[in-house]
Image (cartoon, rainbow, N blue to C red; front, top):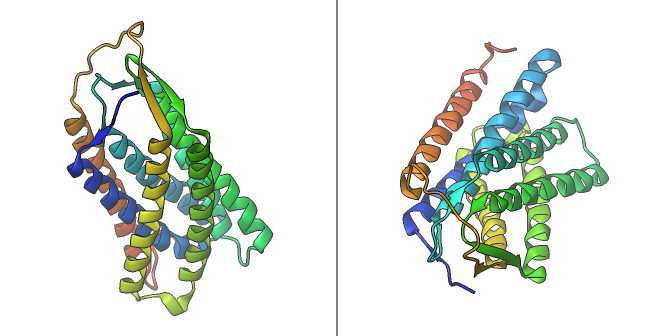
Length: 247
């Protein structure tokens, strides 16, 4: 088995994206709740894409931060599937947040589905790794990562529902602090899942060299995600006034 190391700069990038995606989710909660009809569906769809892209990019940048003494490339088709899983999990979360008063049973069921979706995104992303090695998972840490994903999803849903109320509008500092906690919780799921993985060399597997190194690819993903989340936040703020452009 091989020991793994992490690029500290990319770890910081992944943490920043996790916090920003969490803050965007908190801001989206009020808009998804307030919007009705076709506008509501538009907010739900756009919000799911933005939120899902943020969660996925945190995961992928953190994956690029990972290093073992072997060359690693990624199957882009499988990477795309992991992105779709993140978007679907986000859509389900925003759908629950948009309900007037979701019951504890609905919250528990929704957080379980969302948590499993996030775990599916993570381990699908792991399956996208192409390298001359076999990957095995420690059962205990594997199950722990899924449990963490479900617990994080439950807390995220509860907080998002709480912050959609008018009494919390304008309290940016509290939202920022909450986003930091949520982002840290999401990161804990990812790195628990990474800790569950064990890599054993397998020279029978051939891997072709990729066109971009991990650092360059991480910069591209980070910039693209920052653009998506920034546009989402700008749209939320523009449409938070008395005359919404989308309502």
